[in-house]
Length: 87
Image (cartoon, rainbow, N blue to C red; front, side):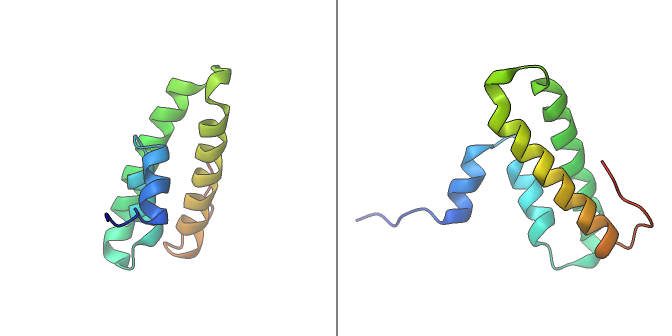
């Protein structure tokens, strides 16, 4: 019998265009790499948000993107010590 995919793998499959980059930043323990991971994730996420904006069929993904962008703002403020981080 095949092993079931992990919860993280299932979550990543839900929004494959941006979620892996977001999760890499979210789970990074390497402070030196974190800045670049956040930068990449934020870029991919903002492009995806722009592509989906105005299309009500993607409400769930847009909501997930907004929540994830807020979490990146917290990471920027608390872990990267940005003076004011907002999206």
